[in-house]
Picture 1 (tube, rainbow, N blue to C red):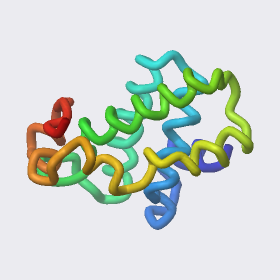
Picture 2 (picture 1 turned 60 degrees about the horizontal axis):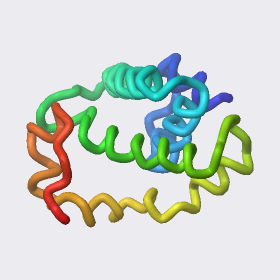
Picture 3 (picture 1 turned 180 degrees about the vertical axis):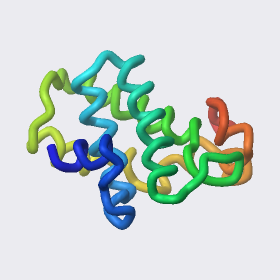
Length: 130
């Protein structure tokens, strides 16, 4: 898959590192690897990619642990619930229609201030909304 190859090689144009492509990448890793390994590859890959395009992974910008783990867990739940064992165009198309991938979805679980805190960026934080 070209997106994954470009992501791993840090050759993906920055303009193509979209909200949607984050999910495509996460789905691919979660289907291909056991969840702990997938999470490690996602986490390390995002950090490496950010740096390759001139970004920094700090308490104010770049990689965000809570957001990454929040959405990765939703994708893993989707895979398990639907019995997905292979990455296909049909699986990808269906995933991209899921309501939990909408940008505002996470705001139902986290207040903006809490989610944007240095602590949430650096370490997993449980949701602060019920």
